[in-house]
Amino acid sequence: MGSLVVVGAQWGDEGKGRVVDLLSEQADVVARFQGGANAGHTIVADGEEYILHLIPSGMVRGKTCLIGNGVVLDLPTFFEEVDHLTGRGMNLEGKLFVSDRAHITLPYHRLLDAAREAANPARKIGTTMRGIGPTYVDKMMRIGVRVCDLFEEDLLAEKITANWEDKTHGLRHLTEEQRPNPDAVLGQYLLFAARLKPFVADCSVILEEARREGKHILFEGAQGTGLDIDFGTYPYVTSSNTIAGGACTGTGVGPTHIDHVAGIAKAYTTRVGEGPFPTLMEPFLEERCRKIGHEFGATTGRKRLCGWFDAMLVRHAARVNGLGSLILTKLDVLDEFETIKLCTGYMYKGEPLSHFPSSLRVLAQCEPIYEEWPGWMTPTGGVRRFSELPEAARDYIRRVEEVCNVPIALISVSPSRESYIALDQSLLRYDFSVPEAISSES
Ligand code: IMP
Image (cartoon, rainbow, N blue to C red; front, side):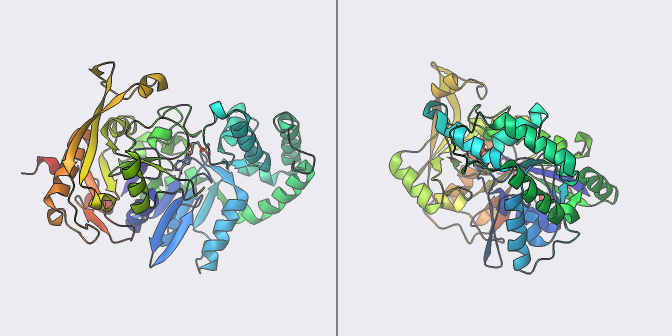
């Protein structure tokens, strides 16, 4: 039995969907704990591609899936995904649960998100426009609409009307027709409520029961540590705690019941939206990386910026998440690079920095310290054993492990389910022995 939290160690899009799909094979329960329809997990299973924004990737394997209280629930997206999965023959009954404490994203949240982004280009975050920030604002302001409120019609009507009045200032640029009508919103959400009812549960209770029964539980993070509201590159972050601690507050499981935390990092780095990116590649290589790695947002289709592996960022992620192991993804994207740069730290005003800075002004003045590693110029997509990788690839991976100071447990080498190298099987088995560092091998 074991509880595993999987988080992104960079700025999101690390390939979590694919890894969670793999790790959910042995899981009994898969839970999401933060974010909302801003996430986009792509899973390729049996030749079919699934893109899920809200429903945990484990659903593709027919696992019990939970959407925790820390998630902000966009109901039209949720039902679209339910229809998509049931349309492919999946039975979600008794398998998919939504926390009664999760907050609901309402139509005005999306409009407010767009209005905030458009208001001042200098303060734009580059959000996914899914209403994430405004939904969490309401949650923290203690005026949010929760799933359990959907079943109390008078309370729901009262909240929507009061919030509506509260938001009119932010939406004053819209015409009457463009603004959602509160009565229409109420009517629509009462219909949603009826449809949602069979999925609603106290997810904390389900998790506790699963734990007592010795089940394997996988907590699936969305976005990445660089986008965490507290430990990311604020304000260019999302509005939730993407780090492992969020698994506790976002599902109702205590920290003593988490057995292991695995961080996912690409063999390089990407970022979408505004915000600093110290290891951005040279334009020609960046373009090449984006093309080979299909680096376009699963939710918005936006171009992702591509950069070299940033060990300063991943060490920061290792600390704030308590990473017990690292999963390296998309190694194959580097197959055609003659030289690969690896950022081992930052220089600031002529001195090496000891840790990832909190101030964006400091970050903007940091110069990455690079090592250059020879590329392997050989396809790695078919490799299933570490020893069969080209020597230059093994050297690069060992060095990544060394500079991040976290053992690498898995490496993925192509998007399909079976394309990975397992350096440590314990993650897949949920027994969480301490993985042996490959960098200590001779
Ligand atoms: P929001 O979460 O839509 O408010 O966007 C805030 C920031 O997080 C923006 O820079 C987005 O591009 C980024 N972001 C949100 N979700 C994801 C994701 O799933 N992958 C990568 N970046 C994301």
